[in-house]
Image (cartoon, rainbow, N blue to C red; front, side):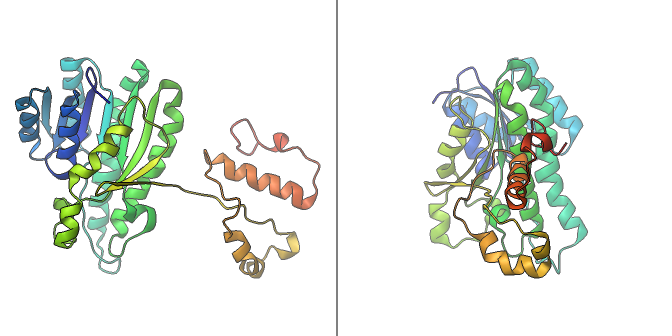
Length: 305
């Protein structure tokens, strides 16, 4: 996979995963715009020294004005923006009992607001050129939870929701949006991983997954997990569940049926949120032996009329 004629913005590019992402894209021919609060110019210099093209910008991703200026600069220099890797992040790890409001807001600001600001800045550009690839950086902490990371987990799962909706809205413009859940030794994880694991989980081991999600062959609406050369895919699923008659529709009835509600036979991965509504309407129809067609209850997007 090559990226000649493609222009890629990488946030948090001054070190760790962002640096590895920027260098990998540059090596394969992309013109790279490296953004970080520090270190971005050094990374851009590495790309140029290797024969590539790169710009650097010093900015916080949540600073709308600064990001707007950098996007304008990229457009003036290269004339297009094809790829956005939303990688910037911070951690403020504490148990919830000790977590301060400021710790929560700071993490949400960089991860969620920052991804929104950067994506919003390039969204109309990508739609206008009928091409774009956006990668949100999520985490296993968001997907599954992690002790002492309630703020980080909330931010990372929020990015999955953002990616899922943007994948739907961008589809007709060939703007494909996915999430990458990396496991890597970076400045954010210093001291958290044992030395043997840190040696295996180098940032460079994630690059192949990122490049795939940034490529012309990219899927959309996916969560790709990566670390140490291993790759997995995460899903948000919906069980078949049960319909409870009115007499059973009590908290005791839900408790009694909970194992059946949780059973994973016939589990599915909904293509969008309306699938849950459609499933519940269909089950209610069957359960109540109703004669009302589902089409009379749901509009073309699956929302209740």
